[in-house]
Length: 296
Image (cartoon, rainbow, N blue to C red):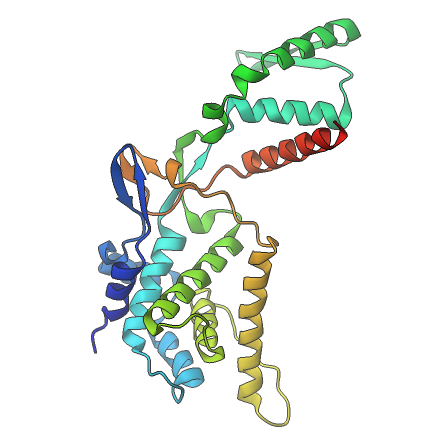
């Protein structure tokens, strides 16, 4: 059986295209993955094909439709490389972000003093302003600059810090990547099998793949009968919980933007993760604006 069968299907039917300035970019063409590098990375991380095949065989072997386990290994391996190991760039805090953070802070706490900090020869020097009239004038000036600082151009995009390229796996929100892994496998099976809803058996296959690649142990709730079925029930419930958490936003889905996923004219292999602090600042600012709109 063709071990690249599923990768070829994914790369034919599920490509994610983005157009910018008249150019079309493709971000998830798995067929371009370096196979030797992907296998080497799996070995370094202790992800074993033998365990992959063994666990799938144990849980799915007598279920229809039949699956090509070698092809599923390649697809899972390439998706793992794409989602967890390709570099992403973290973004900087922009002028607009700093401004939003300031206004949100003033709204929450008020201001007793303003402090300026400078540094010379490694030593910090500070000047504090505590006069109410002067503080009011500074804040009045900052508010008067609102339109120039909060322009659409400055708030729409994020500055990319090219000095902060990291494997996405090292990013603090790895649960988001787990959800993305499940989502990509779900999209593949729906497309390949031509169904709108996956069977419990296929969901168990997806959770088995995730657990093997995460090098976690399977949870088996033992009872007097149907021990294996109980284990499968556990996997099915895990799948449902992760999908449910994502829908309810309990899994923090960082703001991904293909508009900033292009670096020096080339698409990043994975969408760029925005600066987590920047995400928090913008969400808090939006909540503050909503509050004032309700009042008025």
